[in-house]
Length: 185
Image (tube, rainbow, N blue to C red; front, side):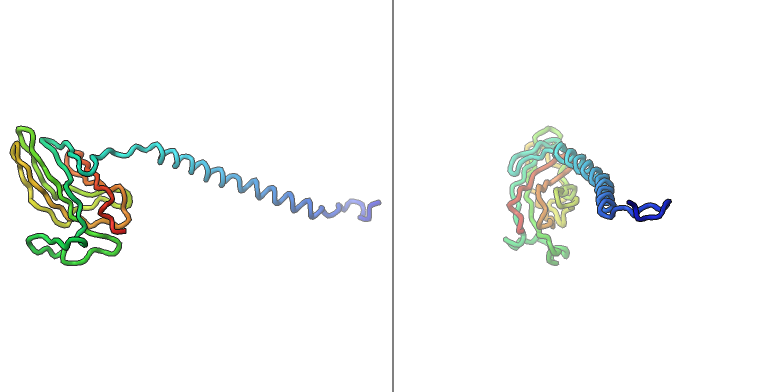
């Protein structure tokens, strides 16, 4: 027998209502989780299928318009204390926090009849963890090498300590890998 008056409904079972509310919350939580998983799949696909731009390995010669270029050395300035022949204020100051300075030695050789135009100031360093970094100092200035001649260029860069996969980029899509030996951690 029912103890409630006619026309008055009995209160709902609280245990049943609690389970129904939990199920509803779980169903609503599935929507953002599904979207997050879909986003993760798309980003994972893009990351795994992205093709890195090729660069010439450290020490190998790269073909440039009119000749070749090769990285002969990457020397941290903190290790050898090298300074340019003329005083440069930016090099007199210490490196910024979280960075180190390196001297990159590049040899340019003219093989073609028209020679090679060399402008070390046009080179930049790029890579993971580093934006496009321009040299702090370069030598020599803009030079036109006749066929058969070579010149050694020196470029000083300030690089982040944690950057990886660094590449020296120059005119004509020149990409020379810098390796990891210069990192000071």
